[in-house]
Image 1 (cartoon, rainbow, N blue to C red):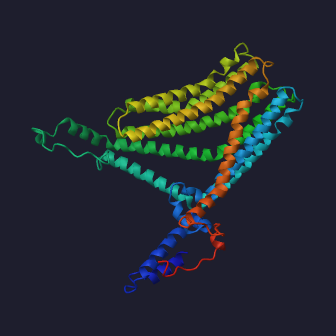
Image 2 (image 1 turned 90 degrees about the vertical axis):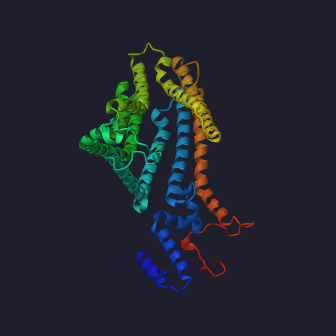
Image 3 (image 1 turned 180 degrees about the vertical axis):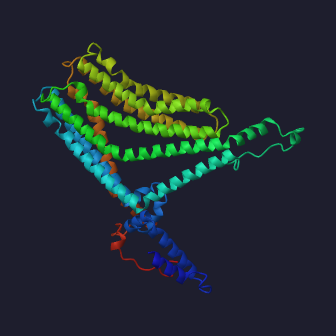
Length: 480
């Protein structure tokens, strides 16, 4: 491709053909063709949808035109719909077993769940292969670009410390340029003293920032490595937990509840390590930014660090606390506690998100600015509140029914308790199936509509044909 581009570019370059008026347009077309074909993503889009696909790729949502991305998302959507169906079957069989409608072994009851595990494993393997194809075909360029942008940002921050560039990229112009009385001769004002103090501390600041930046990048690299390996490990540990639970329920082993739940706590421990590395990278970034300010680093970083730590660990703490309380209730140490008290940590996420939405609403009311922008932001907050109300109604109705079932086992059937679960899984199955169908067939229909937008009716053979099976005539003078 590069050899053909060089040959045609030299042949049709305007400097080599000063008298030919059409050579400049031909050179522009050659350059555009090379830009499209040298980019793997745009080349895949062109091979599938032609020139109209390349033009649509620059719009919002154009990433879905990439065949690899659309295939990855459609696989995930259809797999999610299949997993939702398998979960519905599992909960239906479990309800019949708990309600004494049959006496099947739990190894039979868990068959749909193990089938879902195998399906998820296949999806993870296919995603890994497609991610490797995306990285090898040029998507790593975006990672390199982000890395270079981060390096440039670090260099700009260091230059700001040195005083070579202003900390504010768009500083306001001075309103009064008249020097103060005696300021031009004194040279010992508070601003000059502060600048001299900063110059004396520059080497130590640079050393500390480089040391912090090295440790932060090492932590971020470890986070990225663990993030690629943890999904498969989570799935294997979850399958181990299911197997140990089936062996315990069928009476094959005489284990304690803590021993049965050991794989689950291993999952939480691995997740804790991953969150700790993410928190370490975030804390180091906060310290780096604090070195650029003139305030006391300890005083200026204490509150952001506490907020970041709370935002990182709060969901993990709630899950572990709930699991420990349920295990202690079943094992005996907390047998006297009611199930409503055992499930108290489950109500904390609703309180947190409701408080966050309330304070966000109050902040928007106190803001002043463009009325249209504020109205749009209020509409977004109200939409989030409505979605939160719908989701929380499903979740906490299930929690209330489950507490009722555990407190009075004979008062209600498990099939009634699982009604919110069945509704949520049915909606998820429908949404994922529709999304997968739209990715499979809707993109081609959109490209066809864009291709024949200016015509009253589409031709009878208006289907998008891949370029390797397409016959096209060369452009004529009338087309220009």
